[in-house]
Length: 158
Image 1 (cartoon, one colour):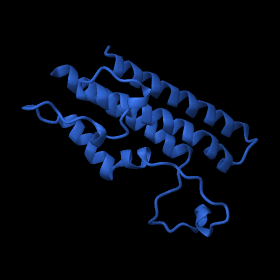
Image 2 (cartoon, rainbow, N blue to C red):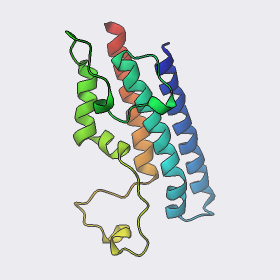
Image 3 (cartoon, helix red, strand yellow):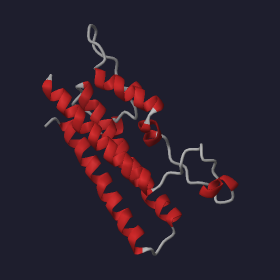
Image 4 (cartoon, rainbow, N blue to C red):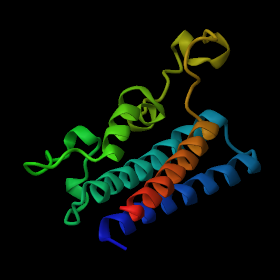
């Protein structure tokens, strides 16, 4: 397994561990949901962003990188060599980064201001995006895992 793909798997695994710890803390009911979200969501999101960065490096064929060089999106990747086109997997990622669930996962998370009237979920309009929380983080983990598995299958066929 290429180094970048192994690092992507490791980061995804760490996101699952953080999600599991978050779920256990929710079950213990000792802390407010907002506090648990502020504690765990940034950690889950960090690991998912790292997994994604490593994975897009793997898809682009780049195997030498360190943590400080991880791209945050496809537009941070080097252009393909002359005469080569952008792989379709990277084009799909770029689309999801601009208008899909990856856009939300990659966006910086900001803790809602407790003084703001919009920080209370019951005051959000039904058309507004839901506030990030456990369910959304779990969905991100599942979707990134599914996407990575599907892309692995696609790349293995080449």
